[in-house]
Image (tube, rainbow, N blue to C red; front, side, top):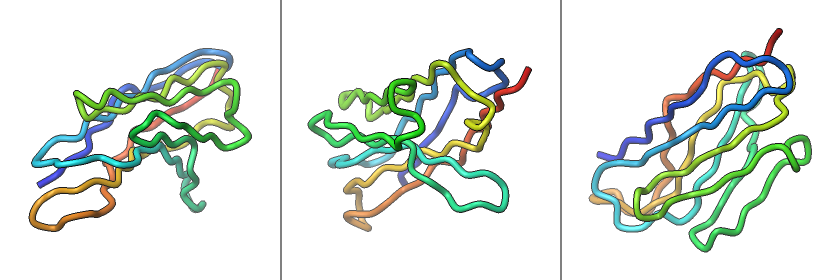
Length: 120
């Protein structure tokens, strides 16, 4: 069974930095896209950044220039470096991956979420 495990969340002051990590484990044949989403209580989950298996990345406008997504294909891991954090970045951050496993084949998988709080 595939698991996505996030780490690196926490409390940081405005202007500070955090680095989130997400490691996928289990029987994995191929990971296509990986991404980070975030969701505040009572709000819709929104995509923050994504990266495909060639390294091409995309970002939502509000984080461009501040966040950087990367991945290590050998470790089935994706990272989100978040700099110049703002209070409005406070959310639960979720890792997502589209991958091929057995016996279910191609599918979407989610991590359990990690809290990021930006506050003075």
